[in-house]
Length: 400
Ligand code: HSE
Image (cartoon, rainbow, N blue to C red):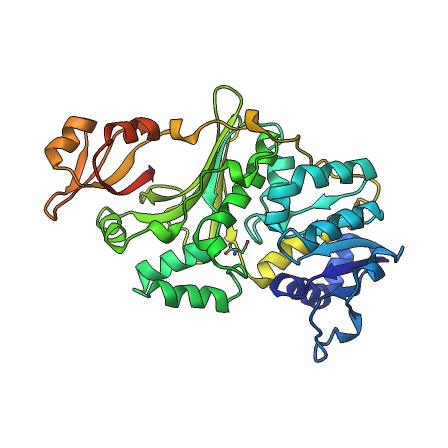
């Protein structure tokens, strides 16, 4: 029998404990042994919970119990979560987490300690909720040189944008629904401002390209800049505005990573990804494009990924899964402003000026005191250069 301890009884932690109970026989069969939740750690008490007798309020109880082989961290943030993760590994316990902030900030350091201790540190649930993505990149696509990885990585913002477009709901109503459904972060500004997507693309980049990428190295713009007028222009083009995280291997062996809302055309792989769904496209040099799609947030989809890691860890005591990446630094990243795209622009210039500046444009509108148009392929630096001294109201990369 394997004993586990779950740290944090919020949306994900409670989902893990419930799934461990409801799917008990299936999980025991997959792990080829019984998996028992021995402790739940939380600062709150849950006297009415069916699991009330499992609660402890001191991490030391778990740390000092040699019968606990796997610690499941679902606290979130990087304070207690980091401390308890490192102490668990030092105490000889495998660690599973859904905490993308922890992995994006300290992944290399934690993986290094896990490697030294011959333990597993697994975090499938940290990206894409219930979508299997980290294991496929690490194992199934291991023969490929990954050239690019991009996707819709945040359920909350995709839910908000979908609801605003499809149902005509307001931003506030849509955000409230996303919070009620347990999709949003404790502080939803991390979703709205793109920080959550940033953490996830950092993890995908590190796993795909082999070096730690820190969130601070990733230019990040969230959906707070998206205006209704541009959503309407996008709709008139059969397109949608969606928040995308993207990482591209560049010629010098580095990786250009950024997060920004994109104008997604109807023939893009991401065009029909709506509501809480996420979609990740991985471009490998042997396989071409592969797409991973599913629920990117929510209690049970996320718990599904966490419990799969628990089963994997239980089956691989003393046989580390090979998940690792090297330390980060300035030499790991290149400037995403040098990545070329077609662009959607709404600017305070005339259509004649737009044509003079960008040549072969597609004109969308020039009757409202600004000009809306799309450009051919150009990098962001050059685009900004040409628009110097002119007003840009909206500017999105086009995903086709
Ligand atoms: N707040 C996150 C999201 C939760 O909306 O995608 C899942 O990581």
